[in-house]
Length: 306
Image (cartoon, rainbow, N blue to C red; front, top):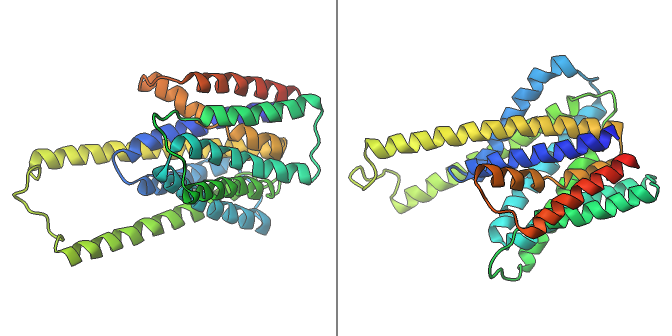
């Protein structure tokens, strides 16, 4: 029961983290937001380590590092496929894959449930699709490229859960330290490569130096840009803090409970995003998403009882 509660809370914390990250990504590069969030999460985990602790081992380090690679590539593919669209199809497809892959791995390795447990898993999978569904007017069919990227993204995010599940139960947050370290290194490396490539293109186009007489290049525009950057970085920092907290909840839940249960509950993370968007941004929650939220609560209750 406690593990199911951690999974449900963790999903909402993940969704809250994504909400802040989405706001930040409207101001600066999504890749930079993700990298900043990863680095912030690493700092938070380092501060928590003296309190939570954990046994160092090659298993904890290795699986933690692998989860960092899987998570970084999975998130990059997620942002890329959502940019291609349509989100209304690709977003729930990614979420359902991120649940099905580790759930299948858990069932193959011997996890068994009673009738309530299997009912809870089934309802949770339906809830994942409904909660992640983003209604789009006139949405077009997804391309094969978009579908393949969504499937790969979900599988890699699911792989992150599988790798974390392999870590020793006495490792504490040691695996997460290496997860965040590898994640931040890869993402900041990608940011650096893109920055160099952009600079090279601008030089080739003769745009290295901005025209100081161009509209919006005055002190007011610079001050506005600086303010927007500060706001974006603060949002990215908040995103990293929440993401680190969600990772701790996830790892604790996996060590106390079961991979199959934690995977489907974690995949409900869009619930936290849409609830915050409704409260903060006054965005309307679609009826299908309301149904998904209700089913998510039902599924969490059934899994807790199971």
